[in-house]
Image (cartoon, helix red, strand yellow):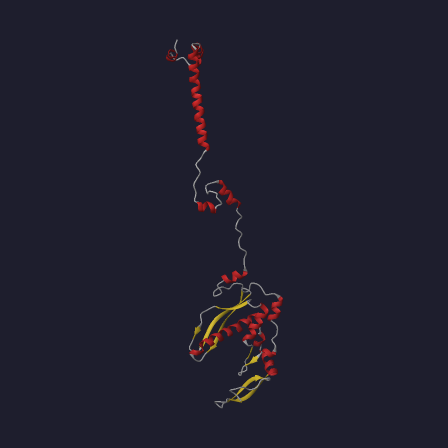
Length: 276
């Protein structure tokens, strides 16, 4: 019975195995041919597997920009090494708060930063409330006692240090036909401590620049009252005592107009021009 006959009758391969063994016992050429037929698929399969494995192993290398690779240390963006590089990078530390920079960022034209937040230290308070020396106090001809502006600046510099305080404008300069006024704020150690409006008279347009500086000095004097500097100058008891002890009033004559009037001056001073 031939193989085709067995297949035609629908005999299964398992039942046909004994018949195939009987048919295979024939001439040597037939067995060798069958063996070659069996080995051929094995060789071809091996060759195909080798080629496929070689194809799987050898992958084309990605091409990246030279500039970008050099910047990344020759690590492509698509590889896992780049992720590891990002994970190993140290986090950026936040910049420490700098008080100097904070002061520069504050808009003192509108801000009230630090006002009434906390008192200054005891050494600063003692220096601010220290009594004025009688030699530093002046008196105007009309009897008004005052502390020269330069003395206020010296006290502030002595207490807060050079550069530790400043006077900043809080409004535009207002110029009337005979008056200049502007609001200023006193800043000490990065904190707003006082706000005051300065005033200064002038008699002609050429005197406006000088009046502007006088307005600033007047505002500084008023701001210093809140710090306690020269607070006794507004004490009526101190004013009377100082004028009685250190000042005198005299009748003098104006050299040009020949008008007589009474003026105040310190006892250690002489009458000066235009009076005699």
